Every structure is written in structure tokens, then in C-alpha cells.
Image 1 (spheres, rainbow, N blue to C red):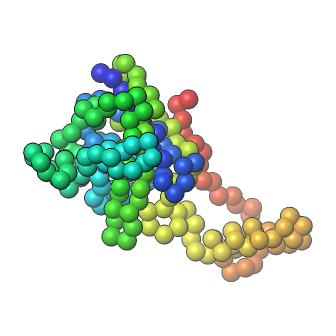
Image 2 (cartoon, one colour):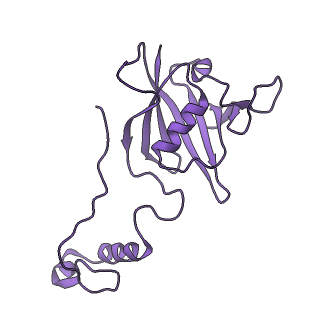
Image 3 (cartoon, helix red, strand yellow):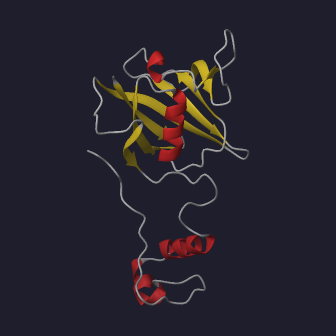
Amino acid sequence: MPIFRFRVYWEDDDQIYRDIEIQSAQTFADLHEAIVKAFEFDGKHPASFFESNDKWSRAGREFSSEVLANKKDAPALSMVKTPVGALISIPDQKFLYEYRSAKRTWNFWVELIGIEKTEDPKRTYPRLAHKEGVAPAQYGIKGLSPERMAETELVNDLGAEEIAEGYGNLDSEGSEESGGAEESYGGVESDY
């Protein structure tokens, strides 16, 4: 069974993306779940895919998580009932993906970047094949409390000489920390 490799860009910063591999017979609902997981969203909100053109504008049908069955002349088709492979007609097929929470709509560009003729039997699909950049935070600030954000801004505003003069390693109250603990934000996962 063919494997499609899609690159999913966050619309606000195309340097943040995820490469997802999916079997051609898997559905847009499977791709939706893989995108939500890859960008660390909670998956509690509705989403839609739209066929797109080269300018990343809606150019075709909508595939919605809220539609459960495909009906003739319906405004949107079902993600659950539509296999991804049924809509691949050109080598660099593009889709817009919208994830809609009550407060914000997240937009992503989804582009087909490769097709493998056969699947790897040791892998489970869909799968995250590569990620680049820190995913946007669905709610609030990702990875930093407001206190740590203020500290980070203070350190970024200071020059190297000022930090060397005693402004380094401040805790949330503004006093110097001890112990030299470091924070780790993890690395980029990749099979390549």
C-alpha cells in the first residue's frame, strides 16, 4: 500500500512544521488526529480540510470532522469516510487544515512532499516522521509560566556584560538561584 508523506506547516510561521506519513487508505480523520498529536493540541475541537491551490487558498471541497456521512451535494464531506488517497491527483497536492477552538482558529498548510510505493511493516501509520520548531501553544504560553517568561524577557534585554555582572539565573522573585539547575526543552525527533 502506498505511503504519503505530508509536510504540515503552521500558517503563522512556515519554519515550524511536521512531516507525517500516512497510508493511502487511511482517512482524513486519521490525518487530522496525527496533526493534532504532532502539534500537541488536545483534539477536543472541530476541524476541516479544504482542497487548496498553489496560493494556499480554498479551491475545492471541505472535509469536516463534524460530518459523519458523505451525502450527495452536501456542503462538506466526512473526514471519517474519505480516504486520503482518493484525493491525491497531483504530485504536490495541497490542503488547508483548520482547527477551530472557541477562541481561535489555527490554520495549517498541508502539502504532499513524497510517496513511497510500499509501507514499512515495522511502522505504525500514521506516524510523525520529522518535526521542526516548537509547536504553537494551543492555550496560553507553551513551556513557560508567566513568571519564567518575565525572567526570560529580562535576560534577553540584558547584554552579556550585564549578565556577567550578576544578573544571571534569577528566580521568580528576582533573587539569584543556586544549584545551577538547567531546563531541558527536548530535541528534534527524526528518523532521518
